[in-house]
Length: 270
Image 1 (tube, one colour):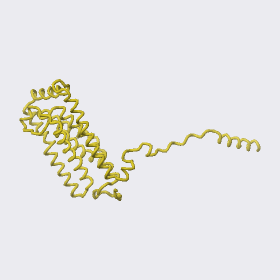
Image 2: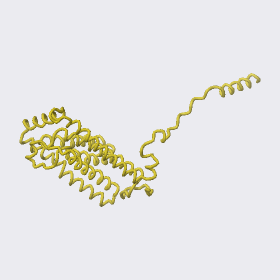
Image 3: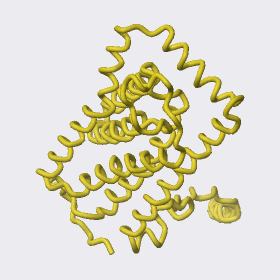
Image 4: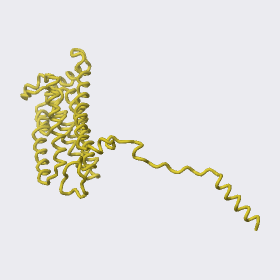
């Protein structure tokens, strides 16, 4: 009996003296603070969205300027300029009338067809009184188009000589078709993927093919250089990213009135 009691006592002492395995660390959201978790974002969500958009515009413009500076550093001998001329001349030499007809039709997807699609989308959102998505659509696509116009007037790069055949009167750099199509179709693809997760991969693939064909069509037709299209993609991607992250913040914080299908109660934004 004494031996049993002594054994139990020794086991208790040994258990108390042995090191205990460390408790699993608690994952705190404050350890990796996201920008939208800042005090300013919580207290002033609308002001945060405004600053977010301005920063996105500045970054997109700065990256486009850096791209142009690299491409146009030495106009006569720059590597990018030589590539531009080589690609344009090769396509004009090897192009066919049938190819011109096909890519002229594809080019329409980057302007009149795109405008019509955006108008229909805006009308649907207006009927649904989904003001938040309507605002995102207007800011993303309207802001991207405005940014493209400003960048064209900043750089004032002349179009290729072959562009005179299509009565292209605006400046060449960056490509409006490439930039606007990536922004608009990219936003629509993002919304489709958000509502239908299984369609995420097909939406991304379709977006890449569609935007890629529109950009290639502009080069094939001789109305833009290769660097014009690449710069349009670059600036458009940055602006789209800024708008999508801003939209996600607005959705989480429910900034502004949503649509009829928004079931969760809305807290008034300060």
